[in-house]
Length: 351
Image 1 (cartoon, rainbow, N blue to C red):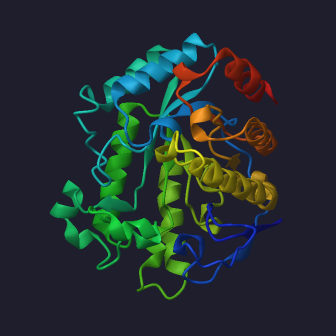
Image 2: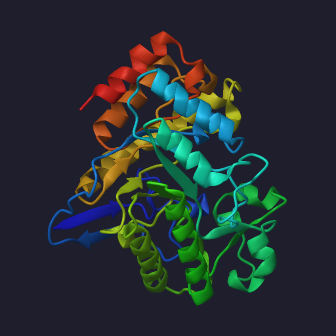
């Protein structure tokens, strides 16, 4: 059964699959429209989950109290969510064994237990192939990283970032061993969902002359994650090597940029563009529902993001059409009864 992938990785622009800017959209090996043959549809291991994600309102500025407050708010509002997802901001990239204890003084295992006591499951974000130059991992093991390969493929803004994002060499057996130990730590903490991000980064190693080796290495890493007792979400992921080893696939860029809260009209223009991106990609990647659940990103409706009423309803429609993951991204404590009952309740009740 053939499945066509338009665009190289899960964020790539399906409307213009061959566009070369930003570099992260375009395969360095020119595999921007591919076809994979599967003997039969892959039956999902789990139903598509619901949840709340910390990134879309709080960005990297999170702490354990924010996470617990949102978990409690979801219960108080009777939203019946499955997961609370702790996104970027819980540690320095690369130091995945050690949360920032200034923000999470009780540690992750304690926080997972608190979330579980509220009748919810905990999820966690990481970027397994990247580390900041300020991380302990980079200072202790600089030989684990691809020489002279920084994060400019992740974002052109990396040129101006003080602590560069460095790319791990997945061919190094010590790197694979380290990542396995991190995964053991996550499962020991009790996480039941793992969102793996920026999975395309090491493809830009100039050593690779084709996608064969990075495809194989990424498939192996995703297969290790897939064997764990948790729901796996791939983000920024080359599509072909993920077949059969992920539960869900993000299908576009983030729907919003949290740093732009209240910055109207800039946020409205950029977020409207992200909405069009999602709509195009959902249309082109709808057939991949036979391989994994679609993750259309979080639903947001608070006015701080700059979306109009019409755009919020459009986002609601697209998420329902995807019929996959349904995660909320707002500060739940700030939502009005009109937003809860007018936008969120219909979204979560739609089947």
